[in-house]
Image 1 (cartoon, rainbow, N blue to C red):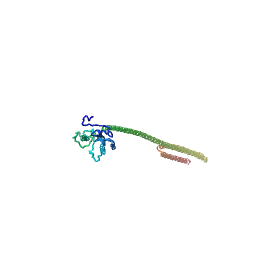
Image 2 (image 1 turned 90 degrees about the vertical axis):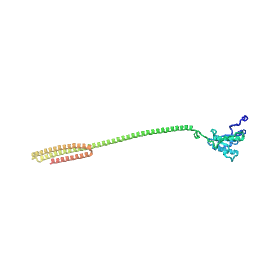
Image 3 (image 1 turned 90 degrees about the horizontal axis):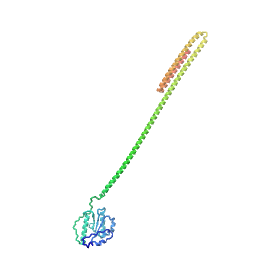
Image 4 (image 1 turned 120 degrees about the vertical axis):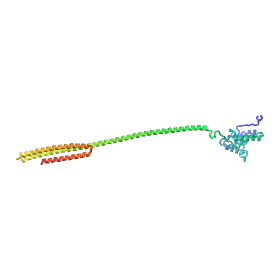
Length: 349
């Protein structure tokens, strides 16, 4: 109907054709098969019937990844289908095109090939004077392919940064908690150590004080004991000296009485004279003995007092002084005994 209307050029686009329904080629002067590089594996080309019937093949979306490999495989399959084993690849009617790009070299070459084929086979007078180049279609990108997702990359980078910030905040919080825990533990440990050290120091000080008090008490007790022993020894010595002097005096008195009695008996004839002399002598001896006894007692008391004072002084200074004082007291008592013995000798004489 369109042909009957007298149109010079009719373009009919079909859909769903490729592996079947090739009858459209029976009604057209030229067949153009448009495909994409995304057909799958190279073996899938064996199933595409239009590669056998199409006069020209356009591999559109030539900017896709793997488009060059697809162009090579399609040309090989075209050779096999048309038995063009020795044909040059550049002479085959297979073109890579990018229809979305203005003034695309592939589209220009495709246009020139279509017009030349129509002019040659239909004699419709559609010869084109368009001059083409040998350039291959190449996508001119306003945004490079590896940056087509730049907005997504920006948002993804923001999300990654937010995640990293949260992770770092969690690490910082964990580190702060760990530091706080360590600080608390160190403070507790230091307090415990300080308390333990203070308790130990108090214990040592208390023990040392107790030991010092014990030693002082023991030393004082020892000094008191020594002083008491020295005082008792001195008092005993003094008592012994007094007892010796008294005994000596009694002995001398008894001796004098005996002598007087003997003198009285033996000198009965001269009783008066002898008795008078003996009585005088006895009285003198008795007086002398009493004086000696008093002198001895006074000396002993004086020595005892002196010894007691010395013992008290020695008790403060140490055991050696007490021992020396005891020795001095003993020597004094021995001197008193010696004096008493001399007195007894004198009375006896």
